[in-house]
Length: 119
Image (cartoon, rainbow, N blue to C red):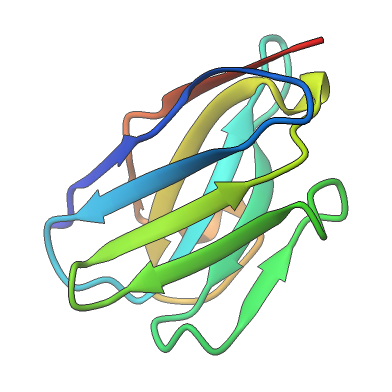
């Protein structure tokens, strides 16, 4: 069983930055970040393999967000720059056996952290 705890969310003005962290209780393989805005489906944001050598991003965040991991700390990060109001959502980290952009491929989920971007 893997437990995931996100932190780092908050309120920021458009154009600002935030860094989310996701601490895992055990070793994880592939990790992903997803987000869910009110009234919308949970959508893929970014993913990274255990080695950290392979990353993949949703088109909406490419060039603005960076996913990274520190395996010694069992922690994954999401650096978010140039934030836009449409980035407002609850952000979730997830862990799974395979690197995927599909939410159902992930076995473990954190509780989520709110990110609000004001215009």
